[in-house]
Image 1: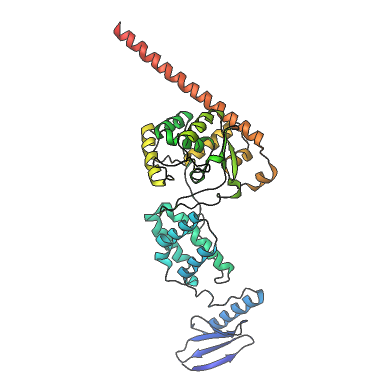
Image 2: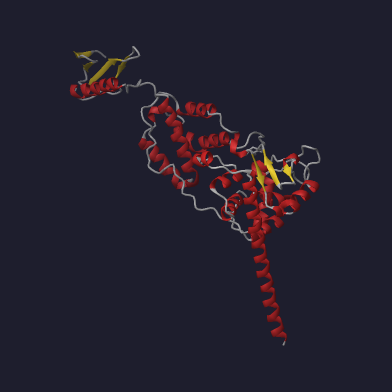
Length: 391
């Protein structure tokens, strides 16, 4: 459509179409002609738009208006691929994309994802899948933040205050008596796994890759050198620990020496480098079958249904601090790499770890003695009641 009248300016130009509406254009730093995305009612409106573009150029904030014309699905999948993520994190991100982000955003370009559209998406998700909405929002925000860094969009549209923060409640803690009961309920083959989780504390995927040479009966402890997380597909991925801090020697309480000796003798694979924990048929244990055993043991002991095997680690953290462990001591035992100041300025030697383990040993012994005394008192009271009834 031809123009009715034109107007030359120092920067760019404006023109009026025969319809009466106005447009504007300019030559960008890329040497390409760029036009306003929409026509406007008046010449002044067109000139204002040009002035804004000129100001962006002066500040160095100019951005190719066509840069954001990149499909979200293609960009997001490439983003995940280029992260170099661990197999479990890669699986998690792809699942969040498939189930929660792509159904809404797959057909949109990056510059079409606006704050109002994100607010609408989040509100709808909160009504149906509240537990995964926070994680999905964090992933969306991270992807779009990279798009900002890539200069594909000017500003991240994820601007909902507090939307990426979790408000999970405090995880439950097991008592020493409950840990013993859970270990007994899991049976001899899995008893040691419960104790290492609680008094180590080692992650499940770390225990899955422990081997005979990792057991130190003299010091009473275990080495964590590798990890073998299991994906939802059932595939076990053997590799490095969650972080460099995860590679560590865990000094265990002295009372666990007998459990370590028995387990290596009775249940570990017989080869010199055999796995420490295997199923009844000699194969690496599976998350699904272990979870069934855990649910039965948890019900038998009377633990809450939301008490996870992983929560035994929280029990271990608590016992460590109650036994006099410093922040650094606890981080070393748990294989955590956060709190950089503590890692730099504090130190936890093997001797200190032995002291912490001895403190846990004493604490467990005291709690067991108290539980035994309470049980004997109940039995005595019950016997007294029976005698009185017989008299």
